[in-house]
Amino acid sequence: MADKDQESGVKQYVTDKYFAKGHLWTKIWQSLVAIIGWICVAVPVYWTISSTLLATNQRVLHAWKYEEGKTLFYFFDRFFIIAFIIIAIIVVASTIHNNHRVKQHVSKEVQYDEDQLEIRTRRLDDYYTHRFGQASFRKHVKHYTVDPEQNIPTNAVHDLYKE
Image (cartoon, rainbow, N blue to C red; front, side, top):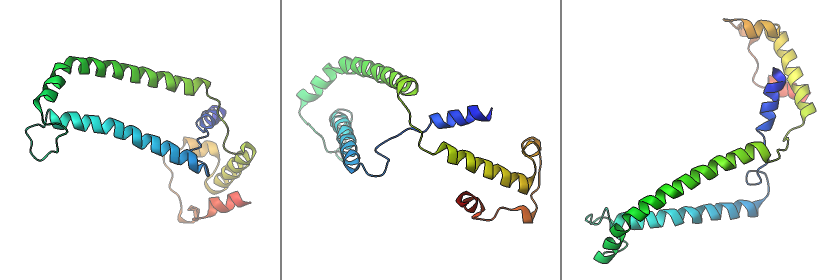
C-alpha cells in the first residue's frame, strides 16, 4: 500500500524549466507571450463591449462612435455566438486531449534522490516510533494525548535529516 502511494507521489513531480533555477530567457519569453496573448484577448473584448453595450455610458472610452460599426456588430451577432460556441468546444476538447497526453505519454523525471528519501523516511519512522510508539498503534488509535515532553522540538526533523 505504501509503495503505491509513493509511486503516485513520484509521478506528480515533473520538470518545468520556467520554475527551475536559471533559464532566464525561457521565463522572459514565456511571460512576454502570456502578456501579449492576454492583451490580444482583452483589447477586442473591451473594444466591442465599450462601443455596443456601454455606448450610452459617457464615463467609458468608446473605441468607435459611428453608427455603422454598431450596425455591423449587431449584423454579425449570430456569427459571433456560433464562433464562440465552436471555439469553446475546440478549447475544451484540446484541454482534455492535452491533459490525457501529459498524463499518459510525457516522460517524467524524478526530482529527488530515491535512496536518500528512503533513508530519511526510515529515520523519521524510527524517530516517531521512539517518541510516540509503534506505527500500528499510531495509525489505528482514535484518540491520543501528547505529553508536553513528547512535543517535537522546532529543528528536530531538520537535524535528523542532517545526520
